[in-house]
Amino acid sequence: MKNTLYLSIKVYAKQGHWLTIGYANGYYGYAQTYDTHVVRYAKRGIDLSYLQSSGTGGTDFTKVKAAGFSFAIIKASEGVDLPKSGTADYFKQDAYNTYNAGLKVHAYHMFDATSTATAKKEADHFAARVDPVKPKICSVFVDVEYENLSKNKDTLTNFVKTFITELNRKGYKNVGIYTYYNFYKTRLNGSKLTGNLLWIARYNATLGMKADVWQHRDTKCTIKGVNGSFNFDLTYNKAIGG
Image 1 (tube, rainbow, N blue to C red):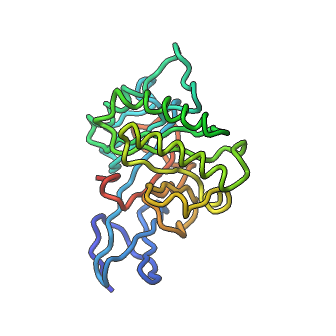
Image 2: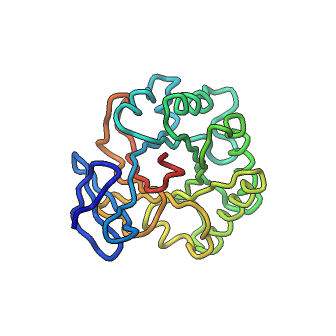
């Protein structure tokens, strides 16, 4: 079967409506077919922590764009108080530099809440960080992966829902959840989180589930424009990849 693809990628296998696709250098993806010959397009992205800020020379987003990437997901906050007041803060600068380079801009928050009240406070903190650049931000994500979080699946899911509801109340409609594959399957109740974007980490040849963003690799990913290695992401969602 000959497939018309948005990017130059090879189709390695087909199962039902899903295709295993491959880029160069060993990168593999997972694409969904809408009919027998049209394949949903794929775009590449990166996600960055505080340590890779453009303000510290860690990232040149113009070079990231030139390397064939389409979007960046930037860390804005963690818990209720990080980054600490008075410390070097480049999130706003990074958001503008990403946007000006022609990349889609997204932001994420590291979730550390162990109560409903703290989940609301974390959402407030995140919104306060993102609000100054909100017009440039396409979507926001809550990163749920810490082992100290509640071991009760429904309890943790409710805390995450509280965070998302608070963001929705503040006008953030494109909200998603980041976690890794096993955490999502064992620590969260996915049936109670429908309607939100999903960004799933699984360092495997196939993702094995439907998601809006796949964090495909977290090591040995290097390009001109980023000091050190970075996390490599794929998306098949135009609102995220452009």
